[in-house]
Length: 168
Image 1 (cartoon, rainbow, N blue to C red):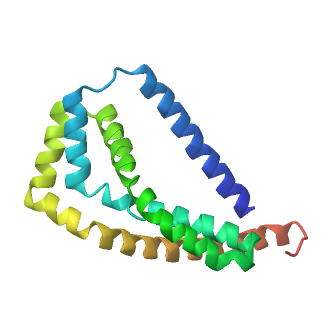
Image 2 (cartoon, one colour):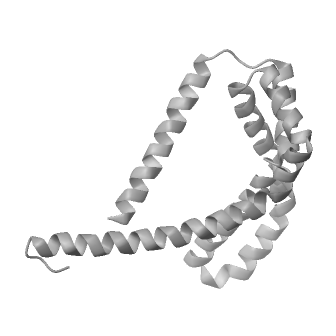
C-alpha cells in the first residue's frame, strides 16, 4: 500500500511538473535581465549549492546498478567512473541555469530585485548560512513524525479491520 502511495505521489509530482512546463512554455519568455537577476538570486540564495550532491548521487546510482550486474568488474567500473568525474562535474552549471530559468519564469525583474535585496540583508545571509542545518533538523523531525503517524495508522487500521471480523 505504501509503495502505491509513493508511486501516486511521484505521478502527481510529474503531472504538476509537466503541466507547469506546458504553462511556462505558453508564457512570455523572460528577459535577459530577468535571467541575469535570477542567476544572481540562485547564487546568492545558495540554491545552486543545494544541488551539489545531484551528480555524485547519479554516479552512485549508476555504480550500484552496474556493479550489481557485474560484481567482478566493480574495481574497473569504479576506476572508469573516477576518470569521468571531471567531465561530469562541469555539468553542474547546467543545474544553475535550469534553476535560474525557473526563477526568471516565475518572478518579474522587480520581484527578483526584492529577493536579491532580502538575500543580501543580514537576515537573508543568516537564512543562507542556517539553511542546511534547518533542513537537516526538519528532515529528522519529519522522519520521526512520519514513523509515529505510520504506527498510528497501522493501529487504527487493525482496529477497523477487527470491527469487521478480520485480524491483520
